[in-house]
Image (cartoon, rainbow, N blue to C red):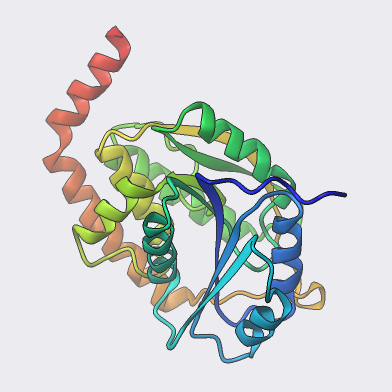
Length: 257
């Protein structure tokens, strides 16, 4: 199968932290469907960053960035976005490195973004029977809060990290405040972009929850990260309340148009 044509506007951006061998499978799968693919190694201690650099040496379709210490998913994505903007790219599809996201849908998400470059293309997860019930319930709670924070701004799922962002608005949002650097990135990015007037387009996409035997890796800490999400939603609810008149006007204008 020939390699995809190298895009000059849209790239795949994969943050990774101690993912193990699953990282190589994820990169290979993404590489089979799109070029370029960029990987930001967020201070991993498992040697995968150095191994990946060696494996893709001389491949113009792949770049690997090694961060000296772990800073969090959002910080890793921001590093990649800055590099992408400097290189002239306009959009980035983010996906997890642990094999949960469907690489075979990369091209269709990118094409949707090319048709509507002003929008963000958000994956709407389709869960399999293996999905943990606690995680699915937690998503419903977060999605309900995000609906209020954006005045029902059209975000079907706020946590699914398989999505295409317009790069410049997202960098501007992240530079405007100190948050969104860790597990809070996916939710806050979607909410704050809606606040800026970036429309969401939701596309269904399956999500896998891999067992340890299948190479699944999770760095979610239920105490630390739920506290982080609680503080984040408190900020966003307050921000949504302040923006409520503008959001209401935006909805009314959208309906009248």
